[in-house]
Length: 163
Image (tube, rainbow, N blue to C red; front, top):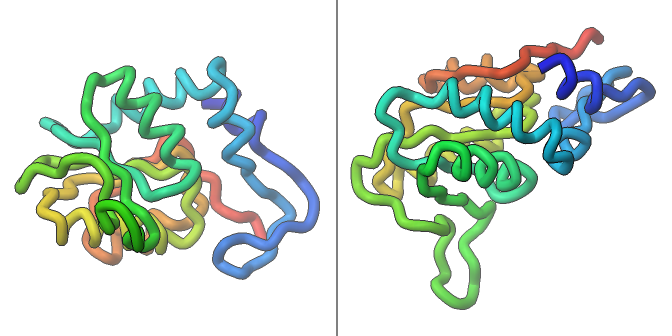
């Protein structure tokens, strides 16, 4: 996963989603948009899925690129959790079929706080999914918050902010 980290690591002054500043930033689009980098990341994520996973999930946003790649590799169906229910069409917050009790692994690209993926896990649970594990491509600290909330978490790379 060295190539993923090297491609996405930027240096400068950055504000993280937590509101903290850092001199290092990991730009997820630098690995999510390149097939030569996305495919090996998807392979590693697929290796970290919860045993007997039946459904993959992702919060709405860039993680949808990752979950699609893992789905193509694993043959597992996907559900996406919107930030808010749509106010038109089906008016749903969860896109894709969620069978009651489906063993689900939720995927996230980069997690600093864990808030967005935690909310997605809560929404999927409310929809009937059995969220067994959350897999992060890059853990920037979010895994701590997710574990404290009771979730099992795995990460392809753990890269905590140095400052």
